[in-house]
Each structure stands twice: as C-alpha cells, then as structure tokens.
Image (tube, rainbow, N blue to C red; front, side, top):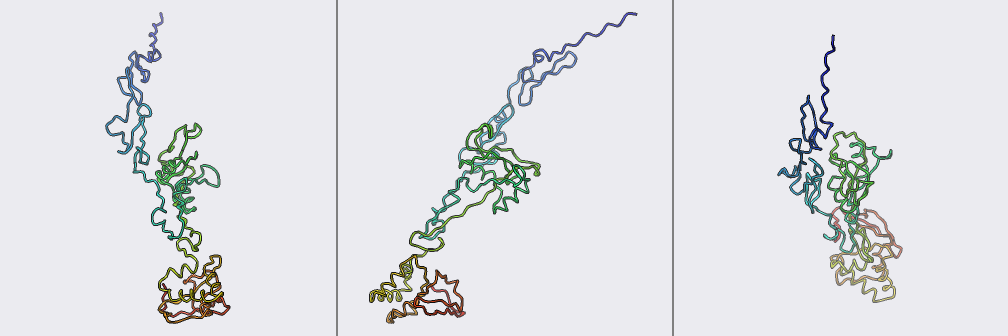
Length: 345
C-alpha cells in the first residue's frame, strides 16, 4: 500500500519582509492569508502606517488651557505649562514668585529696625528634602507626612517644588509630594540625573501609598527684624536711648524740661544726661505724666535721679505689685499699683 502524499509546507510570509506589512505594523498569518495591523501609536491600513499625534486631536490632548502639548513619540505626549505659569501641565496656575515682605510696611518690623525676609532670601523658597534615618527611600506616604510634621512643616505641593526648581533647586532624589505624587527637581542637565531633562522629573501619582521614597517638605520662613544701630528692642519694638525716648513723648515734656535744667545747672546734672544717652548702660527710667508734674513744679537733682533704676531693661508688663528696685542713688524703689491703674502712654 503506497503512503499518502504529505501536504505541502505553508510558507511563513511574515518572516519575509514582514509579509509586505509596514515596518511599524504587526504581521499575522492564517493559512496563506496575511493580515497587517499598525502598532500602537500608529494609524493606517497596516501596509502604510503613520504616527498618531495625540496633540492634534483638537482638545490639546487633555492638557490645561495654559499648557502646551508636546508629542514625545508615536501616540505619546506630555503637557508643559506655558511661560509665567507653574504646574504639571494638566493643571497650571499663574506664576507668583515670592515677594519680599520687607517691601510692605517694613515686614511688620519697627520703623527703626532692619527687615530681612528669610523666606524671600531662601534659595529653595521654603522647600527642603527629608530622608529617613534608615536610609534613602524608606518612607511610606504616611511616614513622609509625619516626618514633615515633626519639622513643623507640611508636605510640599507640586507647584511649591516647581517654584524651588525655578530658583535653581537641584536634587537627584525622588520624594513624596502632598498630592501623593513622587518627583524631584533638576536645575541643570545631567545624564546621571533625570536623563538630562531640566525641570520636574515626575513619577506621577502613586496608587500604592506604601511605596518607599524620600519626601519634600515646605515651611514658610520668618521675617527677621533687628533694631538699627543706636536702638534697642526685639525688632518689632525698638527704642533709642532713654533721652530719645523721653523726647519722643509730648506727654512727658515737663519731666524732660526738669532733666535738661538739671543738666545745665551742674556737672552732676550733665553726667546724668550723658547716662541717659549711653546705650551700653541698661537702666529703667520712671517718668511722670505731665498731668502728674505741673509746669510750675520743680524737682531737685536727687528727685530726678531717684526716677532712674539701676536694673536692666524692665518692661511695663514685667512690673508687679510689690516689686522693689534700686535707684541710681542706691535707694529702694517700691512698685505699687491699684486695680484701676492703667498703662501709661
């Protein structure tokens, strides 16, 4: 009995010039029939395929109205906020660089104080990087938030990190952001950091909040107020020497006239006036209001010097009923107050 003839072998046309399909097409064969279909990101009949530009859909491919859609490959794109806007491209807001708060009402410092806005001067605009004591990339999202809180800060937002990057903040270590994203800033091109890309290297929203990363935190820095040379105080309240302060209150004119008369009458009086102008000497001067010292009343030199206590600067709120201070003449000065007593002007 003769053997049956074998069926002829089917040629794999897809191995020959991709079956006549385009180079960016998938060739499939069923029997002797070849089918071609364009790869993802391309469109066409399989024999001819062209790149799909997602930015040409008439909808800016979902990018924000103040963002530019850029094609990064077939069917791929990225959104970038336009100039003078910050954000991730899907959400862009007008750029608002930090302003020097010292330009507005001297930063709430005293008029006789120098103001320094530490936040405005900060090169990272309040953003800073934190890493777990256990090493790099050891913080879950919750632990990252806790780490920032422990530093009296909050987790940085994407936009806050963007401002820091625009201020030339460069750090090649990814960290959590407030929204649950992970990113890091690059201020200059480096193949070892962000593949040469300058900007925010964004890993996107992380669905798994148990992933381990570092964290970027944000803390608004203070305005620093320092009294100018020749003035004393905490910067929010500054006083010159005792004579300057005395001269600045019209309600204390009668006592001032007595002090000036005393200084013109004797060497001791001149020494007392010099004492009042010496900022290196910290003393407390008790001055009667004009209503308590008439223009026709006179005080002796000893009366005047009894008003000066040889103590460091003593603020009104520090005085309590029964406080005893020593005057410049060595006498005891007893502080008493009544319930109806009001703080002097």
